[in-house]
Length: 226
Image (cartoon, rainbow, N blue to C red; front, side):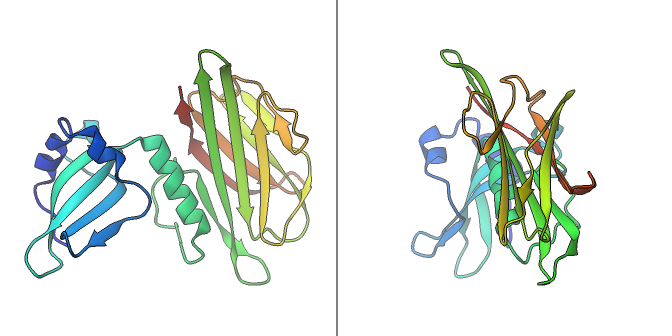
């Protein structure tokens, strides 16, 4: 795929109509009637402007002629917290994904080097959110999802700044095992944490076996809802 005029397209994003940005979501799509290729949540890496490094953009490209050559014509900055979570969930659910060459350390996804009896690698997703509503006060929520854990009992540990909390012990599910932490909850399936548990919008999630050995760990940058 041939992509041109990136700097020009990013400059356009400053004055782009926000309505256009709102209609890009879900999966990428190529429309051969309009000759448009639309891709949500594209992460910018190794760009000449360091202020844009690591940010996410929704992009629109136009096909040139009867070919698979596309030109980037519009880019609008997207919510990076949302895009990170989408990317982490996609990697978590993809059975064939191998992130051994992925240098992103804030995407909330971890891929283990081991596997269980069926040959599938164990995988961990960490997601977190801060709800900083002026009327209802601040709330913190963290979730850990694990696929393909070996049979046995486990608990989760979450760390943010100097705050640390452990979940209750759970038996590994055949498919997906989930641990949830939340402030302001009376749900027995969720571990109670303080409203200000999440510090600097980052969380480290770990899965521990009954010998307190870390089986999997991942870092996440939290979505902020204010």
